[in-house]
Image (tube, rainbow, N blue to C red; front, side, top):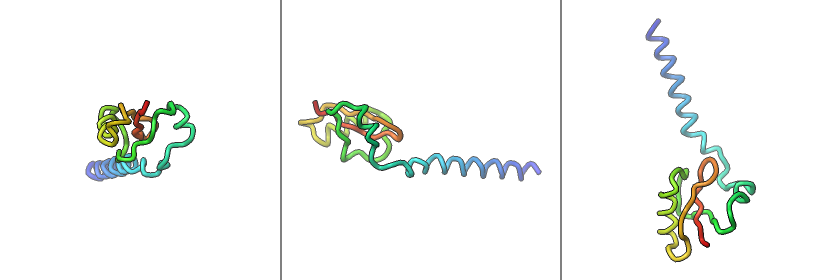
Length: 88
């Protein structure tokens, strides 16, 4: 009986983890207009950043490598986070 409960609990935990990990795939690819309106017009979506943006420092590094002459830093915005590069 104890083994059956443990197996059931482990199965539920695995299913929940899979839902959490893959759930962000169902989000829209492009930010909604309300997300973009919260940022200043100087922010532009990064074309090189892949995945969810969590750390502004990593976003900044991607933006600086993407266009070191125009972008001065990066910022994660929205959920799931997208990387935006600051140009002015």
